[in-house]
Image (cartoon, rainbow over all chains, first blue to last red; front, side):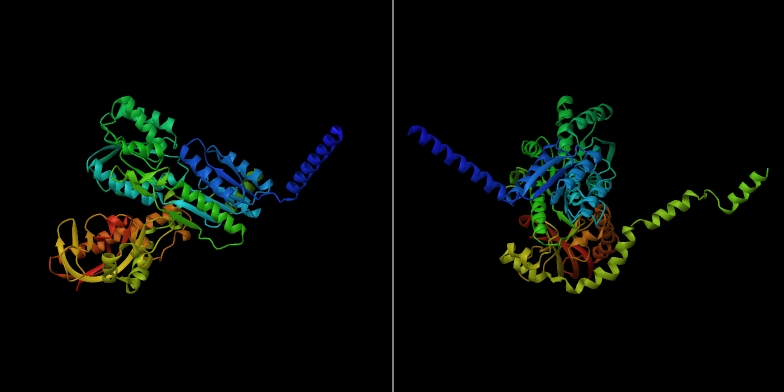
Length: 316
Length: 204
């Protein structure tokens, strides 16, 4: 009797398992969305990628993040794989404004819409839409604050980002469009640190040796601002050299609140990434009416308003 | 010998390379490049100034700011992309209530004496002239650098053509007619007074 009972229980369990497997197999697989990010070696881009993935998942997609490691050839390989694997849309943070166009066109030819996030490509007919931080305007505001806090005379250095990236030059030009109007402010060193914290530390140490009387440093992103700040701590010059960054990274926002760095431009990585995922969803549901370039406002964060910002955005 | 002669004739008829001066090449390249100053100059006279008639009456906006500042964006503002900031394209007239070497204040409503419109003299920064009217779209430009150069060129026209006309007529008590653009980044700071970048100023 016991044996019969055990046997029938086993049969029920087996039937239930089979039913579960069959039901799961009968359900259509979720459409796949790729999130291709220029680099995950920077917390800001990690937030960008994670936010895009999370929003795409909420909208019912199977989202995967790919790291291009700031390498256009790795990015090209990701696009090949994504196209071959049947992804339905790509949320894309490009490595190079010109070098990435071919990848986007390849996806377009395969019928896969591409939505650029944060960084643009130099084309208006490749991506479906481009959600871009208004870097230039953000740095115009930073430049005005720079002059207000440093004064109309002094020596400053600039740490540039990747030279092939439009954001590098939009930020630099935005700041210079203001600061260059004041001839008493002398740019004594301008070097790339490729948006990288460790490189910024090295470059800043070298700059400080050559220019010990520096008054300020303008950094093209907050990772470099952190590297520059570290160099200043080591040199005992945090009180002398004002650090200006860009991104709105949490660690820099905290330093501004503590009065250790001067200002940053708050980009909104979560907003941009979420919007891009929503655009992809709209596209896949039939919408084809997208503005090609959608600027996202950058807000100036200073000690006066830093309490309003945190967690890569504005507090409610 | 015959071979060399044939080769020389062929080279003369079908030269394997052409020599052009660097000046010529640079000139040709420059002509293909976007010239923001030329663009801004044409845009200013052909599109921007003719659009002045459709600017919002600044008096109506100032009166709305007094009672419901948070409604200004919805009723009169133009947003570009995603963000909290917005632009206003305004025209109006009123007396100068303050003037020094840095800025000129105007009052539009008869009550009180505080400036409701502030026009800063000196350097002009930002995108209010480019973006307040909606006549120029970022999507028309292959990269942001060209689009940003337009702002700088338009601001340059304000500095060289408009502000110098304001200074001689900006005397307290004198009335001024104006058309201009404003960017509202923070409603707590930028509405009272409105900071205007003028595209037209003249005695009223």
